Length: 488
Image (cartoon, rainbow, N blue to C red; front, side, top):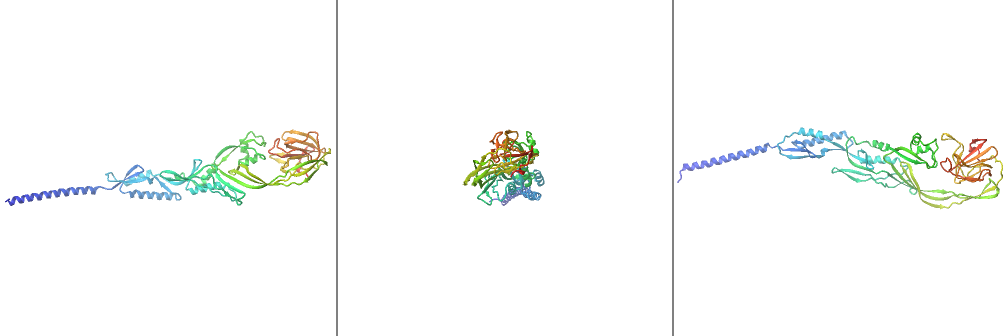
């Protein structure tokens, strides 16, 4: 039997060990708790991939960001604002780095870049400018078109746009080159298509605040355009002032661009240099119109030697025909660029007028009563001051190209005369002479007697002429007179 004293000692030792273990365990557990209690949640702040610092709570940055956006929206009230702050992200960390909210916000202030959502206008691939949205850009383009649309002709166009997406531009759709046709009130006679000559795109994107402009500023820039040199071929009926007006430049500018000009003299087919401001965006209008027009009846002359020369008798009155013509005309910025007949249909055949022309000549002096030298003549230029100089006669045009002696007399000149081209002069032996210029054909020769109304030549455009016509003069005792005061 063991001694009670030693058993007690053994029990006491066990208790001491247990107590010591408990104390050690408590110390270890309390130390871990202390360490854990001392660890603080931290958030690293990144702008894109750049670490700016550590903050105690992301809400500190998010509230600051919201306030910045409110400030920008107040400053740019009518714009939609964005910035590089959209690339902010936060990473939770338990490192022992220092937390400094103010330092991070200060760094963000120095790194912030803000932009406005905008619509970029591109013409032939080049950027013309930025406006606040696609609607504003579309209105601007319609204003440009409207300047060249008359009456009830309208425009329909698909508008191109691009929008931001994943940092790249995405094209939604391009401006339609073949705009839909719009009709005038009478849709059976006219169809008009309106389109831009250049390729136009509207692209939704972002831009710096200084890049976004008003629609009026960009419209002015497009209309102002750039100076463009071109050539113009002189047409029938042209004169310098008409050409200058047609191309919207001053007469002085036209002369300066063409130093070879001498006075007002120009010839059909001559090339003139035209320098003018060309808008950056050109409007092309294609008009297809169907119309009816008369077909000239024409005249058949029958010689009759039983009638006195100068006597004309209408045997059978003619009747004009009728045709339907479809014409396509193309205008660029309001200026005719091309016009052609695409279809023609004869509706009524014309009936010719039959005229008997007396050929019995009675040489001698004129009557002093002057007849029209052309049938159904129309005056295109009168006697008097023209283009700064005196026009010595009267110009006539007519569907009937035959030229007749205005009174009886004798041919004193039949040939080429400087300025007049093919020319005939008749002495009426009573103090009067008549002159017929720019003829394509001369039907008499010097010394021939002619009777009033006798055909002497054919209308033309020889000499200094801008188109087919007759230049007619009446000369009394060597001085040119106004023919219209003598013709009956």
